[in-house]
Image 1 (cartoon, helix red, strand yellow):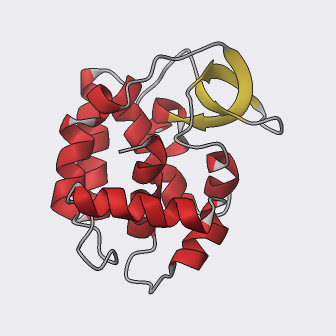
Image 2 (cartoon, rainbow, N blue to C red):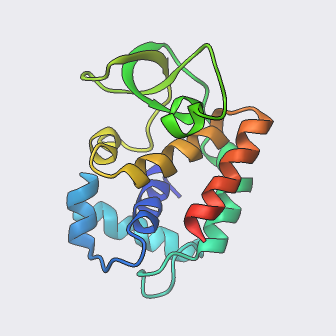
Length: 164
């Protein structure tokens, strides 16, 4: 698995019941068609998407997010940079949890100064600007990667309600 594999699966989840094609994913995620294809193959082998590479195995994905993310794709907040908020700093999480420090994905046009969280792939920030649910899902996954126990528990419950 590679980090962008998680981002691609979450985009498919964010599409809900909408029919999609690899070219549409490529365009909306700013990831090449060949990378999308390779990613879906890896996800199929891992059991996170069905044999036809069209339907995410939601229970398997949730299990991986809950129990594997912090081990397979760990993250430590980095230097202070300008960007867009993620993890517990995302507006959805901010309603529930107060924090003195913001976490951000780097973005030259960002208006928040915070500790950098590495995005799953280089053009992730552009993709989340076009899809609020996708943005929320990725931010919730970042909570699992960097959050405290209570925040992580809340993020997992919210992921379950969005994905199932």
